[in-house]
Length: 366
Ligand code: COA
Image (cartoon, rainbow, N blue to C red; front, top):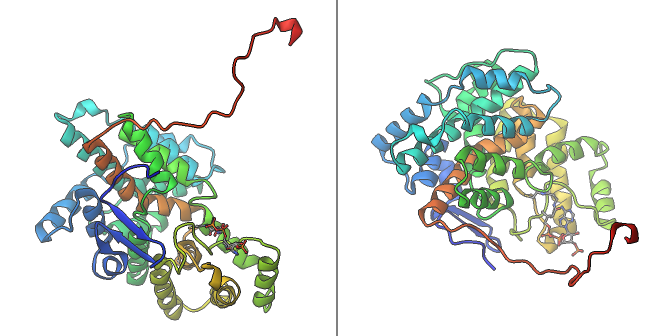
């Protein structure tokens, strides 16, 4: 039974197609910046030049975090996972922007969407700096969404290739239909909860290893494969029915279209920045897996190449899922806005399988 109706993301798992509002993901990745894609998701159409410039202006205006939010991050244990810090920070941020500060619901919703979307990278980068004992790097108004994030994370202006890769990776992760975290966002939004709580619930759902965490597992797996033994390792996994992280998808039964785009980018990155053993292992593993389980429709998914590429750009492994969250914030907020257009609280039914007609016994007889 479908959970809802939506006009945002379309997935065709048999054909390996993903479209945002009717535009194939490949053409968006090739021709549009992540800001244009975010506009498409949030506003429903690709922007013209003046709409884009207005949208970018709005985004850049709201990048900063209040110092009390940064102080709040400083109180969290530095060993905590960045996704937990993001959940906490997102919820706390809502207390600073109560709905009453806006005159009408449309401004209220759009104001919240803008702030959440544009402050998420600042939160992720600030937490990474703070846990390392450094002050957060203030956002820069002259950089794109992707470039500014890499700058805040590393305190260095990123190279053009790094910006391009991050920009495309954000586009590829921005929306994916009724996945678990988007469903969580819609359910929370349907109660008319605060939008920061909506996104916080979605981030918490994405954090689970069955959802957003697979890209971290891919790297651990590739590192653990013995040198020169990729084929034998893959055969052993398949023979023993062990799932190889980064392969297979519940919806796609052909290669995930996002993995195809990312793989092309990975090739460029490794050609320009030099290959690493992990990339060579990945390429060999993909070939071996295609021979072994390709006929079952098991191919690389988006997580297979994303972690490898992020690592090459110098992004710490536990920031991979927060980057996914930064991108998916566009999709979550688009779904939240769509939910509010014609809202009805989610109240699924259940099949009751418990006892009936129980009689309470006095406590000494239980
Ligand atoms: N490695 C090896 N074999 C795999 C596999 C993988 N990653 N994913 C599926 N298969 C095989 C199964 O063993 C099964 O084989 P069988 O028919 O001989 O029993 C067949 O393909 C179907 O698997 P199934 O578990 O029914 O597929 P699913 O659609 O329920 O599972 C996933 C989809 C994503 C949960 C699963 O592929 C997986 O766990 N992948 C690894 C984790 C991952 O990368 N997650 C991120 C997804 S974006």
